Image (cartoon, helix red, strand yellow):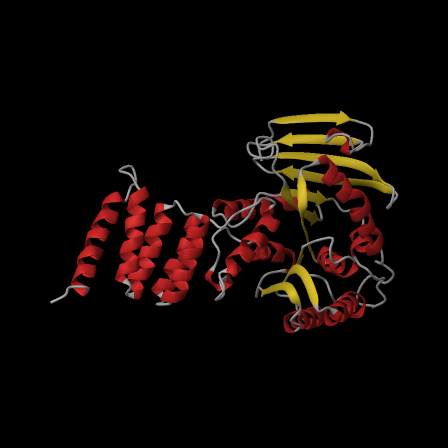
Amino acid sequence: MRLLTVICFVSFFAFSSQSAFAQSSTKQQTADYSQYTHIFKSAVLNEERTVTVQLPKSYQAESNKVYPVIYRLDGAGNIPLASAVIERLQNDNRAPEVIIVAIESTNRLRDFYPTVNKEPQGPVGEGGGAAKFLAFIEQELMPLINKSYRTHSFNVIAGGSAAGVFALYTMQANPDLFQAHIAYSPAVWWNYGASVKNTKSFIAKKKELNSYVYINIGEEAGIMRERYDELQQSLQSHKVRGLRFFSDAFDGVSHNLTSVAGVFNAYHNLFSPKQMPMNALTDDVASIDAYYQNLSQQWGEQISPPDRAVRSLGYNLTGSKQFNRAIEVFKYNIKNYPKSVDALSALSYGYEMQGDTRQALEYMESALAIADDSYPYINYLKETKARLQVEFDKRNLVF
């Protein structure tokens, strides 16, 4: 990334402004994003910590907008990949803009593993500091981020290997802190598979868990693969209400590249697209409201069911000859957009496909009643009305 400006400043540690976030802060401005690197003393960890915050492109221009936050473990070197993938998803209306907070590591083994390793195949005596590191995130870092930047309540934590173990640990230690947990090739072999045992026990006791979990693995074999498979099968088999679980296995991909291999699926599966997918639609049109309520919670803004998106659902249903369901969807759309020419003509089409020419003609006339000559498809509407009128007259001809 091309560095345009670098501004360094020192301030008192306080909550009053963004610059007061840290004892030492550096701003980097690229063509699209602003990044702030903050260095501050953690009272919980009793050491100096560094975090880099990347703000969305719209952050300065849209002063009232709030954003989901991705907490990425293992530092700012992970920002470009996640940022590029999420930007592509944004361009297809499949992800919101996000704030990314990258946490630099000082002692990964100490901070990320919940238990001290006693297994000879690993570094014996290391680990066990995850609870304290989580306290640092929950009690110090997140309040500072929320105070200094325009965040909303949808938080993601992501990391690989040891950091992947920590991402899964946060779900067990405080299930409501993060709404999504992404673990690239989590090193669950650690300490005789303690992380696997704890996760299995946690999941088995849960009846409901409003969370998203993504895990993956590469070419790892032996004990690592055995314990990972045990974890994957447990998460897959326990049908906990509200838990959205996804996993990938990448043959031939090394342990260090599983984050590269998995980042697209991790975020593509996480974020709901503005175009509601067909598999989210049930026989009850209330499922449309539920979908967009969940979408709004993720994206941090109120998103009503878009006219075009709902029409697309109806057209898919007519294409599969589910005419009654299609008409219900088109009618639902008109309640939201009673003055939409497109919504009215869509319902006309649904009735035509069902064979109800009278209703089709009625709604086509309603569409034409509010359309003017600037409407790009006005001629199509007029031609369709004329055709429907001829068909209706034929069917109702009295000899």
